[in-house]
Length: 338
Image (cartoon, rainbow, N blue to C red; front, side):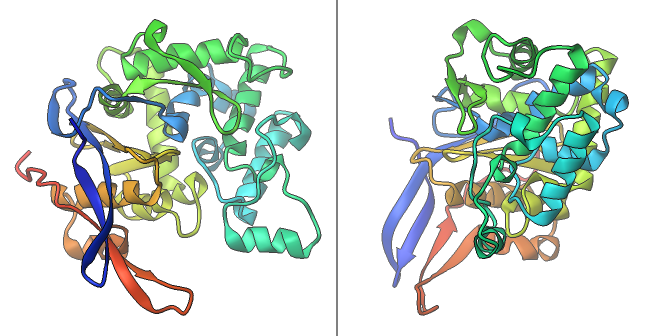
């Protein structure tokens, strides 16, 4: 059975293309309260896993040991644009743990932000590892190495001590046995694990805290929620949905994108977890679906969400800046009385 169409693209009123996908929303008891499509579909969380990957560093006292700020923790959770503010905070982290950009193993990447990329080009400089959107996460991994006294060499190897700690956290938060996960490499070369959409929603519900967790884990999760809520710019940057959305909805709703069409959210007051997966892996449709779900939830009024409306109904323009069509979310029919 095919997954339902979630986003449509029109040109002159004619349906030109569409994007199928899955939506899963669970409550604090892991009960599915809303779904579209096959929620048992397996995929990789990609960068949506970053909120969980930073957990061992916080649980083991890394924030206190190195004097990390909430802004620095938010960057570790983010997929940043490599704007000046991001690079500055990244350098603060590296300085605190006595590491250098050369210690990062995420690979060089052209800045996601076009202005930052153009500025680099005008200066005649090549993109480096600091410009990689995952460099904040990698700085956090280096910090974890320093914290537990593990070598920074080979920190991305699946059998490295810090990756074992991260996998243990992943297994608990996603409530999915690690022996069922298929390990692969993320775009930044860090280990990543295959997990059903349903369990990815569970993980983002557990980010809200869990009565069965030890106090230290719940405290660490509270730090993550507080960090990304207070510093959404560090999670993405200018003209990025994660940042724009959380600037308006946090701390009630926090969320994180993942490559290949993944978007996950925690509805912190409702104690809901959400996972969205777009089948064709396109990135823009995931934001349309996320925004439509937020709109239909009724948590915020239309006036509050007005700055985000273009994420659920986007006019499309050509190179002459003439409107050619529109991309819009299909109604999800999410019940407002939950």
